[in-house]
Length: 207
Image (cartoon, rainbow, N blue to C red; front, side, top):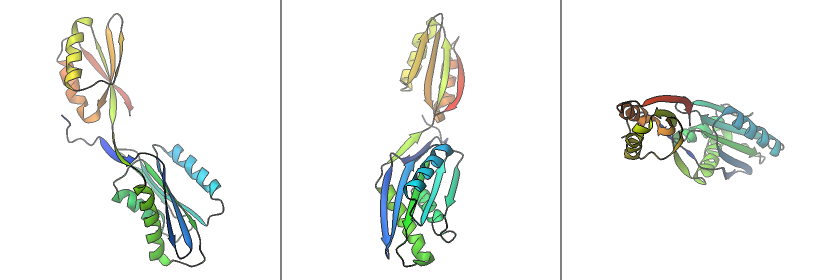
């Protein structure tokens, strides 16, 4: 039933870690599923306190589907050698709503631009591969209102579309809040509105 509308994305399931060593330098990577800027800033603040003695705390993130917000940060490493390689792996694995922080402890030997890019990339891969990649589907709440006479018809449509995630309030008339996959929303509304006496209204919030 799903249309070609983009309503799902891949992300990581939980917090995971990875490590990469090169010429004495240690790169510790931390991957987090995130959904907003405040959450990201809280994690970054915590990591900078935790690793206050590290030479660099670099990161990249992507969040906000379908309108992406992203940022890369080299934290003092040569431009483009840390944040970009981390971000490159978020793109390579096609992951959204994710933050990866890579902490570097300097080992005394410079790695050069190519060595740094490789180290930050490999540390990021280690953290992502230690995780589980999952699909998240965008849904929207649809408010349905009807009289008792239409109850059986409405429930039949919901059953046909395998929709079981709903709240109901049956008093003078019937009200339901149904979580619907974004790409299915318009088709479901059409089916419900074809039942005489049924009205629907989109809830503005997306999940």
